[in-house]
Amino acid sequence: MTGNLIERLRHAVGSSGVISDPDEMAGYLTDWRNAYTGTAAAVVRPGSTEEVAAVVELCHQAGVEVVPQGGNTGLCGGAVPDSSGRQLVLSLTRMRRIRDLDVANQTITVEAGVILQSVQDAAAAAGQLFPLSLGAEGSCTIGGNLATNAGGTGVLRYGTMRDLTLGVEVVLPDGRIWNGLRGLRKDNTGYDLKQLFIGAEGTLGVITAAVLKLFPAVRSRATAWVALPGPQAAVDLIGILRAVAGDRLTGFEIMSRQSVDFVLRHVSGARDPFGERHLWYALVELSDSLPVAGLDEVIETALGEAVERGLVVDAVVASSAAQAAALWALREGISEAQNHEGPSLKHDVTVPVSRIPALVERADRALDEAVPGVRVVTYGHIGDGNLHYNLSKPVGGDDDEFRSRASDLARIIYDQTSALEGSISAEHGLGQSKREIIADYKDSYELELMRGIKQLFDPRGLMNPGKVLPG
Ligand code: FAD
Ligand code: MLT
Ligand code: ZN
Image (cartoon, rainbow, N blue to C red; front, side, top):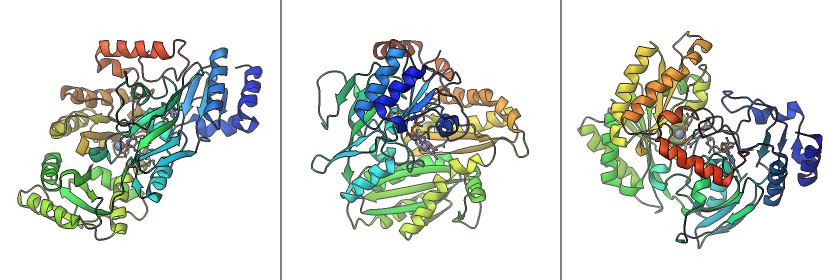
C-alpha cells in the first residue's frame, strides 16, 4: 500500500482513524482464541457510513483488499487479515450510534459497531426485548452478528440474526452505499437482498447499519439445571417441555460432564449445583411477557413427568435471579474455560434435533479410537439441533501433536454430521477455518451459485478474500 493511499485515508477519516503502528495494530490482527494471526498495511476506523464508503472507494481504486472487522470475537478467523501485509482492516467499532427506536413498530435501528449488549440494554430501557444472546455479547458487534448470522441461546424461540433483521445499510465493494434500512415486516418487491449480506462474513460488502426486530420484554422466568443420563433423554425432555410450556420454552442448552468440569476448574466462583457427578446436564429456561405466569409450576410439572419417565436424574429450579445467573454462568463459561486446557479444536455442527443422540454416540466412539483419551467438550444449543463439538488434547498431551491431528479429527465429526444430514457450521460460519473443507460437504452446484453471487457484487475480489469460498 503506498504512502499516498494512507494519506488519502487519513484525509477521509481523520488522522486518529488510521492506525499503522505495528504495536497499536496488534489487537486487530489476532483472533480471540489466538488461533489466527495476520498482518496488515493499516487498520482504518471510520466514524460514519460516508466515511466507510470513502475508505472502500479509495481501496477499490487502489486495488487494496479490505477485511471488515467488528468486535473480533469470531471463532473461524473471518475477521483476521492474511499474512501478506497488504490488506486493510476496516474496523467498524467507532460506528456506535443507536439511530432510532420505534416502540410502535417494534424496531431499533443501530449502526454496525454497536455492541450487542448495548442493543439489549437500549431495548430494555424502552420496555422491550432484543433477544439475540451469546457469550461474547459484551464485546461482539451488531455488524459481526449480522455478517456471521449469529445464533446463541435464544434461537429456539426467536430465531437467528436472519430472523431478527428487517433491513440493512451496506457499503458495496466499489464504495457505493445501498440503503436498505426498511422497517417493514412485509415487502414483496423482488429478491430479498439483505439476506445475501447476512451470513456472508464480509465477503459481499460492509454492513454499516441495520433495522432489528424488538419483542415484548420478559417479565417472568423460570430456570432449571437438570442432570440427565444422555442426549436421548435431553431430546425427550425437550418434547415434554414443548408439550407443557409451548412457546414459553426459550432456552435449552446441553453440556457434557467434561464441559462442566472445565468450568468448575477454571472459572472463579463456579459451583456444582449437585453433590454427585452426572454424565450430562441441561439448562432449561421458560419465559413469558406476563409478570405472573406461574412458570415455576409449569417447569416443575414438566420435570416431574420427566423424572417419572426416567429421563431426569436430578434437577434444581433457581429460586432467585442471582441463582439463575449462576447457572447460566456455568454454561457461558465453557468457551473461556476450555482455552486454559491447551488448543481448543472447535466444531460447530448441526443435525436435526432427533438425530443428536446418534451423532454423539458415533462421533464420540470414532474420536476416541482416533486419539485415545481425547477430551470431548460437547455442549450447545441442542434445542435447535446445534452442538459445539469441541476437543481438547488428552491429559498430559502435547499441544503441537494435538494440533497436527486437527484436520483428521474435524473430518471424523463432519463425516458423521453429514451422514446424519447436518451442516458443518451451524452458527460460527466458515471464515478461513472451514473455507477449504466446505467443498467436501456442500453441493458443488450450490458453491458455483455462491461464486456467481460473489462475482456479481465483488468482481475484483477485494472484499474479505480468502474467506468462505473455497480457493
Ligand atoms: P468479528 O469477529 O469482528 O467478525 C466476524 C466476521 O464478520 C468476519 O468475517 C468479519 O469480516 C465480518 N464482519 C464483522 N463486521 C462486519 C461488518 N460490519 N460488515 C461486514 N462484515 C463484517 N457465535 C454464535 O453465533 N453463537 C454463540 O453462542 C457464540 N458464542 C460465543 C461465545 C464466546 C465466548 C465467543 C468468544 C464467541 C462466540 N460466538 C458465538 C462467536 C462470535 O461472537 C460471533 O460470531 C459474533 O457474531 C461475531 O461478532 P464480532 O463483532 O466479534 O465479529
Ligand atoms: C457457545 O455457544 O458458547 C459458542 O458458540 C461455542 C464455542 O465457543 O465454541
Ligand atoms: Zn454457540
